[in-house]
Image (cartoon, rainbow, N blue to C red; front, side, top):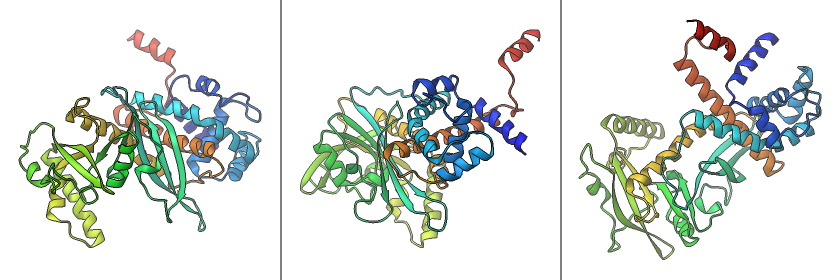
Length: 376
């Protein structure tokens, strides 16, 4: 059993980007080994803690019993605090391997993707926490992280909880689509690209009347290019001008979205409104970016970029359901977050290799593989 686990670990190491050990040194995560025989053992203990959801104390015990390291729970916590930048760089490298790239120019904007996730700690008395975080793109640098209880005043997902400044471009999903949040960022000189939530963000025309959204959408043909309309929102007496960028989905994609909505409605026992069902056939994105800088196609491309990150986070959220969230300080929580993201990206790479390469599951040393190819 132990030999099989060691073999699995060696295979996992094959998935890491080249130079990951050097990155540990350069990032400051491996100034001294102290208690660990190698960078591999340090990485294995930290991922054991993050990935399996063990407490710091249990991780220290398991590391000692398996012969990986003779360290205390406090030592593991300190190592986790220093691992954040190391793991961030590995995450960026793995994203690049998967083809993640920013093709739209930033044009002076500081692009940030906002998100939140729920963390359920193990055990009957495990707490339920909400993690709010913001990632800079394309650096994938976590520039804001906050932990709040699930319930209570000031714990919900809202854009204004993230500090913003002039020149910030905030990318968010429809859960953050609220007039007050958008108006608050607008006052600070920040811009938003947010998926439209038709039930929480009423749109107005130039005359202050309700914008005829569905009537405009129904004019779009099956192969229509991206379009946009000038719209306004109102919050606390303030009027904010923006653009609604839209594109029609393919019929297959629209049908999948309708089926998903109908299944969700059946579970909740409510019937979706006809207009709401019709909106599933379109991608609708609201932005306060000036039209002189970004076309509607570029706005939609930016939102699609955020969605690619969201696909990775969906894996993160499934992994995050298991684990002891470090609440001691921001550095440990940040390291924990990057560790979860690293595991999600490694899992994604493993699935890609298993799908595209067969047979897979054993390493071939590069020099031997080269010799074999040369002999053919």
